Image (cartoon, rainbow, N blue to C red):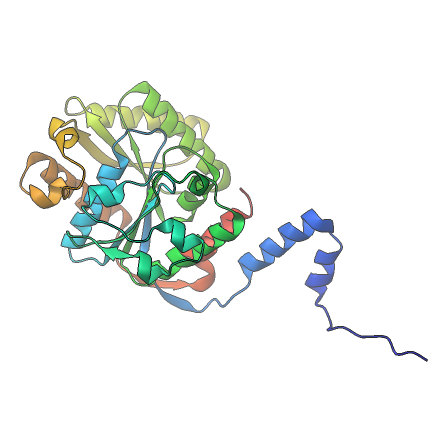
Amino acid sequence: MVDRAVGPARSGAEMRGASLGPRGRGLFDRLLSGLRGSSAPRQEAVTIAIASGKGGTGKSFIATSLAVLLHKAGLRTALVDCDFGLACDHLLMGAKPVFTMQQLVTGKATLDQVLLTTPCGPRLLPGASGVRKMAALADRELLTFAREIGALAGREDVLLLDLGAGIAPQIMLTMLAADHIVLVTQPEIAALVDAYAVLKCVAQVHEHARFLVLVNRVAEPGRGEQAFQKLTEVARQHVGVELHYLGEIEDDPRVGQHRLGQLPLVATDPDGAMSVTLAAIAARLQTLAGPLEARAVAADLGLEARFKQHRLFL
């Protein structure tokens, strides 16, 4: 009699996955990988995504300014440039990165090699600029990104994610993983329509997402709140999400005149009108999204886990 080779015993879950076919097994494995792991709590930053429906709303200017202001308030603050292939935060922060997100997600550099401290204080994880393939990361690269920003969150009080504009899958995925979403828009109808599109797409996946709306480039005081009320009414009727008003920022020609490579206005002109407005926005952010400090989070509820969870459905 010939003895049959006996392989290692498989769990019931593995046997069920084996019967699903190639595509089914792939989804099954992704589901298991998102659910496995220790749930032991660890300290993790509050994560805030800075998003917009269309380009040109001033999102990166706001993200970099908030990073500087929160750092000046004594918070351990890091900014991640998640406009993966069209990054510019390093230029707005006066930083010169040696490595970028491209080397990080492809395994050619470590988090500590890519992460840098900017001249005005906050740490920056710079994105890549002009790299087309970064606009559509492979699944393995997305998982690496999730792991690395999860590790970074374990070091900070506040983690700001400066997203690319629009609703591309990896932008949506990063937005959904955040604790709060600052949605930057303008009073013009085109910007409000695109902002509503972001609200609608997020609500389809995460109906309890927390949105803080910031209206930028307002021509006169009060126009920002009027735009917010319009957006709120449409969102309430058709999406069912709750919006919170973060404030408005008046149009200021000095912002457009600020040269790339210079430090942010909140660092070079802290008493100017724009800096005072941004400081009030940062203070309100701490009220609405606070306390902005590292807190104990179970590993299966942390940033990396949330990223993996939403990845299953996008």
